[in-house]
Structures are given as structure tokens and as C-alpha cells.
Image (cartoon, rainbow, N blue to C red; front, side, top):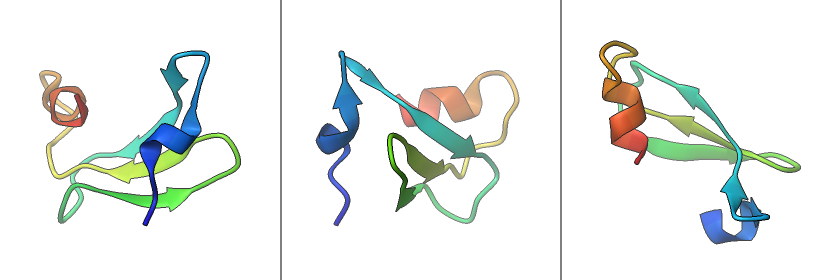
Length: 52
């Protein structure tokens, strides 16, 4: 299982977000960032709010 805490550097967490996904989940860990699928659409900050 991917632990997001392992990717926090200098109090920052780098992510790449894919909105309109079937479900919200961390799908992949890369060298210095996480890939996150988000169910919410990319409109009116819905995807941003879902991540927070």
C-alpha cells in the first residue's frame, strides 16, 4: 500500500490528478510524486476539494 507521508518533502506533497475517474484513489507512486484519480469533475473546484 502507498503511504502518502513517504512522499512529503519540505512540507509539500506533489501529485498529478486525473479527474472524472470511476473512483478516488492513489493509483501510482513515482519518483517524487503520486498519481491520484479523482471521481469529481474538473469544474468549480470540485476535484480540488475532493483531494483536500
